[in-house]
Length: 330
View 1 (tube, rainbow, N blue to C red):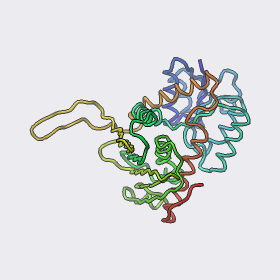
View 2: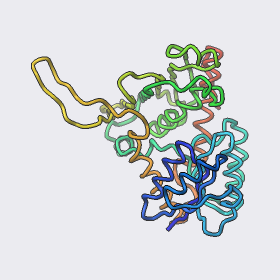
View 3: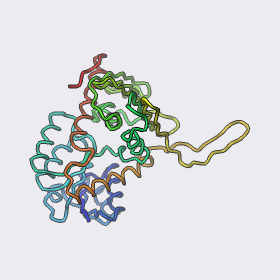
View 4: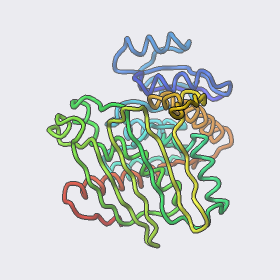
């Protein structure tokens, strides 16, 4: 039984707390949050206790710390948990600063800590199966990866001011997925972006519509497109083209029922947001982390290096969008 302390009682903290509480191999022991009421409500819901972050770090009945706090606190909390001898699962990103990620990973390595970064989409059954078939050679050498990710509605303009921007906040998942599927590092990034959905987002210095092209040293290409608006639901699609064929993963609908009539075919809408679309992925992610802790695997994937590489691509895309020029990633 892996005993957890969760830092953060916001939206993602609620997701992870529910997943921990539902896992027979895990026990939710403590919740910490800067807002005492939020911590109390979440702890009460799952039979946990409210504690401070320091208390969680020092608690002898905590084996693992799940970091679901705002991004600006991730690095320091990973380091604190590592120094306290805890296994760590942290939501993306490790930090908006590449240098701070390097510094954090040095602490993790020094203390021989187990660290997993929360790129949960790797654990989606559809995407995981697609990647497995690529590795087994189903389509031969990968030549082109296409990732489409569109949210149903944009966040408030106020949110984007502290988010690091679309490339670091939203597309970072897709950078990780492109690396996961390609199996090769990208060395060139070229980004375009616009504020087509909400002009206030543009006025806040960000974009809500973006496209990125990336290339590996061997010439393989990935294309990522993002939008903060999709009137039809949460659009999550992948296509991987190879020398011997193509693999694709389509959207997940609320049901598989279809109506066929004289005027055509109607299907139910696609699932509306990430809480629905990736519920199974979150459960699989947690179970993978638990297995790593149980077996002493200090380097579960996605690991700190994966977090570092995704952040480097996000930074390169941001710079490319700002300059209008391709950015080399060394």
